Length: 53
Image (cartoon, rainbow, N blue to C red):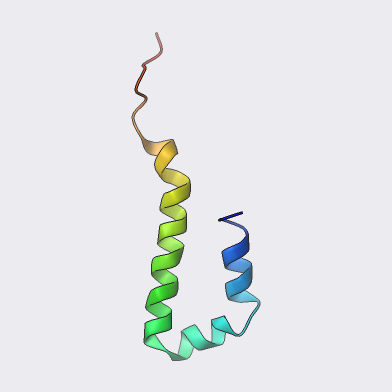
């Protein structure tokens, strides 16, 4: 849900226009999308604690 809902809320609401006109909103949305991406990929990029033989 973290990867589906935020982009839809962002691109299909007035938030998109606001982020294009307000630098603070633009920065906030960029940071939010990076955080959502890290939350998704971080568990997949960690080293396996029990290596398989």
